[in-house]
Length: 429
Image (tube, rainbow, N blue to C red; front, top):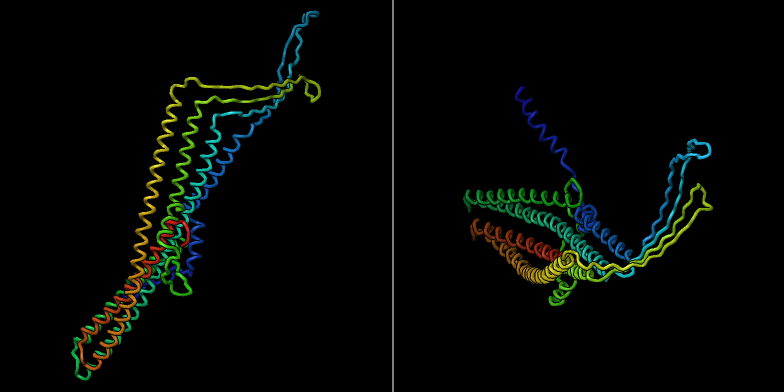
């Protein structure tokens, strides 16, 4: 009885864990991408950068407008004075109230405002390009996990058919053993093939569960996500030519647009630094009211208008330093733009070659599957008639499984390469 209770205690945690296994959630690719984009931290941060850039652009435009400020003050103080007639000290108070309205406007800044606004607009364009790139990067990650889960599911289907073939092989071997036309070794070889197929199925189940968990994390869920498709996802050729696609990406790829915006901002920074050599002109005006009584009526008023010009003759070479820094940054931005264009061209050519290779290999792999199926059919019939050995039959089965697995892998390799190309392009292809 104690031994039985011990076994129950050991078995209880496993039973509880099985009962607490999270339920799977079915989700289409579009739903998974939409959920991932809503909760991804990088996408949220990139969207916040756009809001910040828009605020900077609005601030740069506001530099063209005059500034307006209002002020109000009140002073309450006691004052003691000597009465010469009586020779006594009289206590009193000396109160004052004032209000003012002032405005100022930069008439001429040497082009600094224009450069600042151009720089803010370029930063906004860069932020928008980075958001696009981040969204497609997240979409690629989701597609990778989604396709890996589908790949594992299709490989499991191939392995299940392999198990069925192995069971048929055992039946055929036992039938031939019963009539004396085969040896016990045939049955053992067929049983070994069945065990190998079952072990492969367990590994693929683990791979599918891992991919489903990864997909769940990307979509903000704590349970595994099962990919849902109306039909098997098949490779589809691109609708644009190779040359047209490369030229389009060189002009509109998010990385290129971001580098172009960075170069524009750097050039605006050079102009802003050079503007320090020019004078600045400012216009200001003010209106003030003063009264010693707490009343709106009465009191004294004054107004003023001022037009001034300022020019720093020498500032310790700070202007020269600013120009050198701005020009250096512009040179770096120019080099980064050229590097981004080269990178886009190189990556696009690489992925296009992978797509072309995968597309051709898919066609050849389909033919290989058809040939392996026909070869297995012939070998099964020959083994039934006693014209071949179990080793040749198992070799044909292995060849068919390998061809089917290769076809599944090539199909999803094509889909993953296409998702990578869309990430480079920043748009659907």
